[in-house]
Amino acid sequence: MGNHQLIVKRERAEGVRYVVSIRRKQNGGCDQGTWVANSGVFWHHSAMKIGAFEFNEPIPHLEEPHVIAMLYPWLDAGSVGTLTLRRLERYFGSQELGRLEKPGAFFDFTRYRPTTRFRNGQRVQRVPNTRVSQLTGHTDPPIVLMQVREPHANAEDYIASILEVLKALQVKRYSRIGAMYDAAPHTRPLQVTGTLNGEPMTGLRGLVSRRRSNYEGPTSIMNLLSQELPKIGVEDVSFMVRLPQYAQLEHDYAGTARLLEILATVYSMPADLPQTEAGRKQYAELDSEIKNNPAAQELVKRLESYYDSRHPNSAEERSAEEEAASDLPADIQSFLADMSQRLDNPN
Image 1: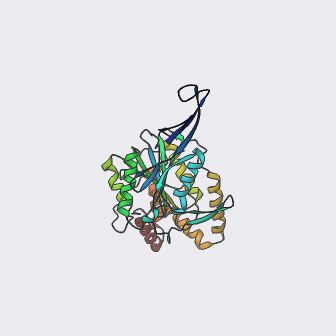
Image 2 (image 1 turned 90 degrees about the vertical axis):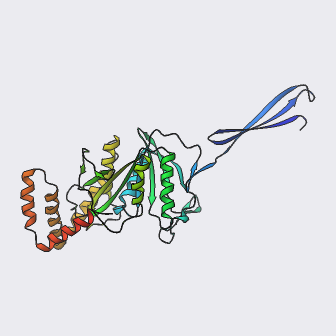
Image 3 (image 1 turned 60 degrees about the horizontal axis):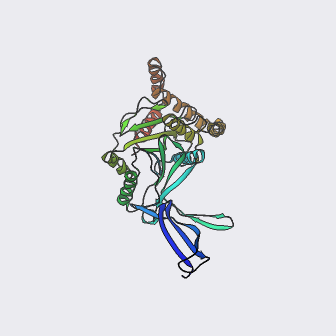
């Protein structure tokens, strides 16, 4: 190159870094004079494949992280799981780590519809995916969020890929969060059930312990993931909010706040993480609607009696409430018993 030299040095740091230097000679011929360097740094971000997922390099080192995951749509009543992850991301901040390389291999886009939006005057298509992100503002322990969707095809490969991600990140605990409908009145505190490796969780303030499920019948293919977690040394945890069956709100903010209260207790998060006011207003509006409907009022009253019989404040109250519950009409008792059996066993 005569009086110029081109030097390219490949380094690994944030992705792959190329340091390019152009040196030109001043005051002399080929063997004399002073070389002056003009350098530039160019970044090339590469991706790492983990199963069917594509992760940006470098993958951060996380010390025994915990995963908080929601399963759409199977356990996302009232969009509680979706809203909970969204609140965590907005409160603590998040960094996307990876997502499925080809989500169409697992999802039917006539059932999970892509969406279109305008950003800075440009139309942007958003394709449903399973994203993996890290909360940047919470590090003890590090928390990874996963927006898991129930697959329509190649479910075994999908589950295997999630397990590969958990192993690659050296995850210690996988917590599945969400909500389901139950024989629960909106006038009582929403109950949250918790399990650890399939057994009822006890000793945590705010949790309700229920007997282990003996359900037999159709289920979600994603329950295979729970079966595999112990085999790779990952704790399997579940937190589920029980929502009023008769309300079925599109976005249940009271349920979201209740679940966030449990997570805040588990992970010593700030008290203002749960936003309770929106839920109070929402259920107050529901109150107003029910007051104008005698049949709905009667249903709520009976659900309150049923709720109180299952969650007494003392042994003395239990017998009195069970007696009151036994006074319910036979058809209502049958309805509540059937609802309890079905909703206690969501799988």
